[in-house]
Image 1 (cartoon, one colour):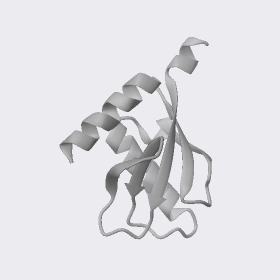
Image 2: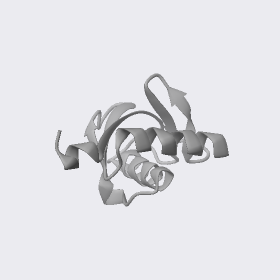
Image 3: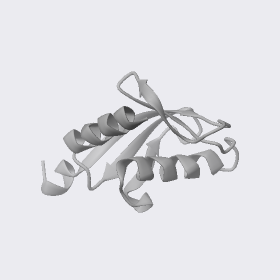
Length: 98
């Protein structure tokens, strides 16, 4: 494992499009469930998902990328600059503050 691998994490996400409010809803299996206001059309929900997750994890939007599930509600995101342990810590903190 290289230093850059240690600062990259994968996050499983279930997306709930067309929600009243955007944000973290809770745990979903090994990952999290995230609500977005946008409709799943022309990539709008994906763009908002990246924005919401970046804000939640306190990273730049460019640090979050969708690596699988672009047309599905079940997605895998790669988060650069955050170790897997730090990722879980930030998610836990966000869940406690809801």
